[in-house]
Length: 375
Ligand SMILES: *Cc1c(COP(=O)(O)O)cnc(C)c1O
Image (cartoon, rainbow, N blue to C red; front, side):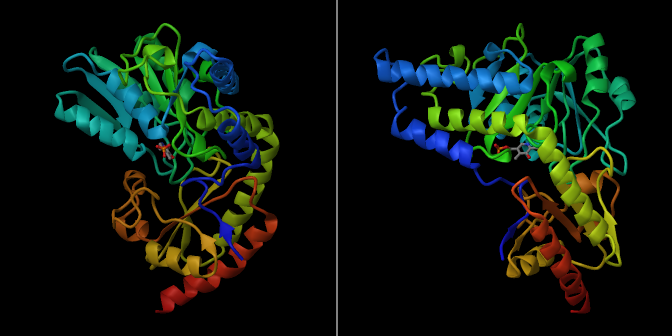
């Protein structure tokens, strides 16, 4: 049996998205900038995908810019806010590396950055954000939901504060979009990043929402695609497939979220029965698909390898840093000691997982944990 429980790292492309992608490859292959009908049809498909994407996020089509993924969207949003000299930004200690490493780069260029801490469950305090704001604050960037522990941040409460001070607010909604309600107006954000492959779309495609009235300097100069903001021939198969996957996820969001959260809670309750196990992340404010733990006296990487031998795909700390021997910056920020963090495990599921697969994990895991501890 193979159980794929690493959907926070990437998802299998949905049938809907794969069909749309194949159709665009086989028949919709014109360049959207060409004026013959094959090109015009590609342009129509591209703009339909933009409208779908906008609708799924509560945005207007002209506020959606297609990118190569979450990393690019985050880089564009953050670096574009820094084109003045000096200044200050606020973020958190639990962001994805594509945010943290952008900020470190900007620090080298002379931007000051305040990294807000989190509580034990991984939540940021809006009051701490209020205290961190300075006269020269250019941007606040806080993720909607965390990729390692699934904790959801109080975005609305934070944008209420930044709006008062007319500071730009960006959120990395890569783990949230398609899984919990994401609405740019309800959130009150100025910019928001999404990535296709985290909700059943293809890899290498994403989008950045930019609130109307906010003008970003072009990311790539060239043939002036994406309204001059991001040049390069549009990846129409990827764009159309991502839009189809997002529309599909959002249209069955409530139903899927309930089903997935039920499986997640069964995982959490079952796994916490294993002695020496603690849950990580917030029990209430958490993504439906992420269950995360720390096991005493176990090396998470060995646990992941042992699970792989029984066909279960899971991860320890962040998938992005696994193999590197890094200690999770997220769990460290949550106040967990290194020896506990070493035993971390993340199981991330979605609507294509089944109750039978949850049973299989619950059947195999206790024995694996015991064996590793006995070694
Ligand atoms: C996966 C992920 C990203 C990076 O997205 P890519 O499309 O893989 O570049 C950024 N932020 C979060 C929270 C993620 O989970």
